[in-house]
Every structure is written in C-alpha cells, then in structure tokens.
Image (cartoon, rainbow, N blue to C red; front, side, top):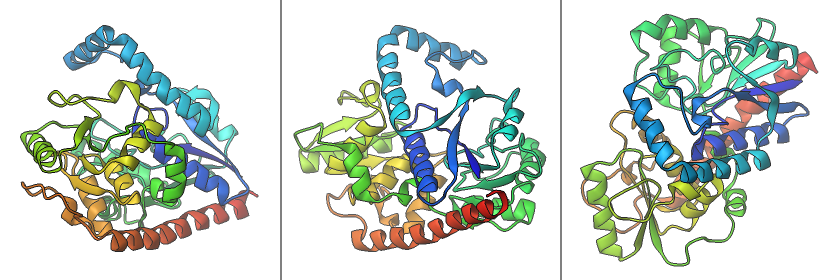
Length: 357
C-alpha cells in the first residue's frame, strides 16, 4: 500500500513540522507500506507571501527589512525537513492534486489545524481530490475553532462525509464532526505523543543555554502574559528567553528551527506558553508549565490539558513557582491515550494493507 499524508508539513511552524515527523515515522514503523508527505503549495513556506490584504503588505515590508533573519529562519526549517521528512517529488496545489491518485492508495489527513475552515475549505487537506475507490482517513485532525462558519458548513459536511475513518484531536472537533455528518469519530492524541520522551530528547541534543532560564512561547502578547512572565522572573531569578519579541527579553525566533525549539523546551526550568505544541512537549518532558490560552484559539490547548488532567497549568492571575500538575498522573494519561491512539492508527493501516496489499 502506498500512503500519502496531507498536513502542514512544509509550513514554518515548530509544532507543524514535529507532528508531521512523528506521524510519518509512526506509520512507517507500524506498516509495510511506503509513506510520503504531500509537498503542498503553501504561502507559509515562503518568505514573501501573496498580497491580498493591507496586512500582507505590512508583513512583506517587515520581511524586506529583516530579510537575512527570515532567510536564516527558513534554512533552519528546510534543514529539518530534509533530514526528518520525506516528501513527494512534485509540489501539489488544487490544480494538479488529482494526479496523486495515480501514485497512492491511501490518503491520510494529518494533524494540526488542517480542518480550520475560517478562511475556506482547502481541497488537499480535506482530500477532495481523492477518487472514491481510494482510502481516506484522518488522524488527529484539528478544526481549531469552536464552530464551522455558516458559509463553509455545507462544504465541510460534504468533504468529511467522504472519509472512511475519522479521528480528531479535540473533544469539540469530535462533537462537531459527529453532529454535522452523523459519522463516528474517534478522539486521539496529537502525533507528537506517539513518540516517547527519550526520542525527542535525543533529537533536541545538548543544551544550548548553559544557565537556567524561563522559556516563553506565546503567539499573542497580552497584559496577562507580561504579568505572568514578570512574576515568574521575579520569584525565580531566572533569565527569560522568548520565541517572539516580548519587551526587552532575548528572542530566538530567527535562529531556531524545530530542533532548537525542542532543546529550549527540554532544558527550561519553567515554560510559559499559549501554544498547543509547546504545552504538549512541556508535558512530555515533565516541565513546570503555565498556560495562557489564546483568546480565539485557546480551545485547542485547553482541550489538551483537560484530556491529560493538567488543567491546573492554566494561569489564574498569580504565578506560583511550583509544580502545577501531577507529573506521574499526566504521564500515565499520556501512556494510556497513546496506546488507544496507536490502536486506531494500526487498525487503519492493517485494513488498508488487506485491501491494497
């Protein structure tokens, strides 16, 4: 059987790249099938993006000014993708995606916000190009928003109804899919949890920072975030390292790829984040974790914390420098959920190999 994965594997995203690696590696280990990521055309794979809004103009202007820094960042991701991910030789878009039917038997929509249709239905991520005789599966797909926008609801229902097996990452996504399509839907763990902590630590390598530090990864700067970071800094005395620009703290955005991200999380004394995957790796590495959910997309990370019993990690206005969740209990939840998630994935692979050989 020949398997193709459709996910955000070429985007400039720490979590997107790492979950893509984890899913592909796990499929290869649990099957006799070939497995490639679809090299999907994506504006997030480029320094300069197509101009459709005034915000796009400002984004490109910023990238002109900081071109070298963005180029360095791009190289970090390209290096990771070349070493750890296997792609189709050709880049695909809506125009030529049907050609994939000639090469693959089974198509898997991977994880991350692949079904976030706030901006429309992506035909590759929803596998709308696949012929009826092909096997269509989703593994830990995320919708990322609380409701499907009314103008895309019909397209969403038609697209999802064509899947043979459906699994999603969040409880809310399961509720949406089952309510709109009437199809059974499994809730499984994000692919990063399918690999164990030792494997991730080995990939992270030797520590970059020799001194103790607080690692901050937040896609939305808020007064609440600044307050939390300053409380943590004051109470611990540790240096603050941030991915994105945050006050006058050192940033790592333009000199880090997925492996550097793993390194900073693995060796941090404390992690403060709004990111789903940063929270995920913090729990994999048993870190002291504080989560400040994003106002619009926080449902994803809140759902993860609830699933694994780590809700106490959510910031409540006062930082306390002590363990915020039961590490042993969360590790056991990860183990049990990993077993169930692997069971789903192995069954899908076995069913496909029986059908296609």
